[in-house]
Image (cartoon, rainbow, N blue to C red; front, top):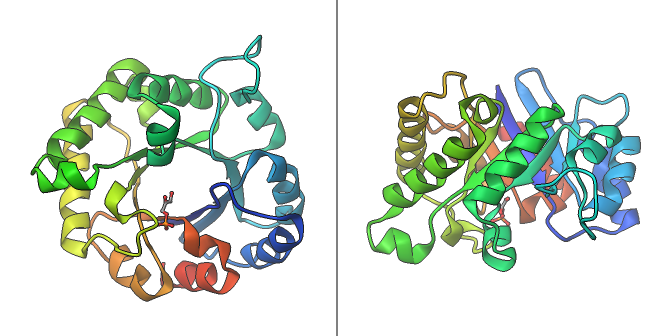
Length: 243
Ligand code: 13P
């Protein structure tokens, strides 16, 4: 199975969304799961637009808490009621701008798995970390800390996304060799910490129609988490076709 999942980030407008979702409806194929993670206010629109299609939708965040006095938070049970299939956790933009720690990420994963939503768990090193030759160490820390707190069973229900921070929104995708090495390293870490399920590992970072086929052909790459290119129906359709 290959996964092609769009992360709209903080983008979208009702009418553009409607046009985009009409195309997204048609994209799933046997062996290719297609989904979109949309801003909270558009979850209802995505649900309605994708009714009767195999295309899935989800959120881009979730509260690490349950119901209660947590102003501004949206908890996992609410997302489940909406019919969300996924929720992204640990995206580098949330780590960078909102201080999301591995402990919080682990708690979010636990909340999601408890209600049957698939976490899309993002990990990845910064440019400085890669240049310092520390990418393996960084990925190992990100994986180990979450597994330790969330437990191997919860982690077994995730989709993992390897998103090198230097490739996100920069137009510079990781080279297929780098993706292969990183995915193999993450796969070996998951085995080492005792995750028995096959956790799909997606690549994210400047995936476009022009590089999708090369990236998705990398051994150990189970698909892509697509940012900017998921906002264009033609681009997203071409990426899904490449899968
Ligand atoms: P871009 O595809 O815009 O580089 O973003 C990748 C990403 O962050 C997906 O979550």
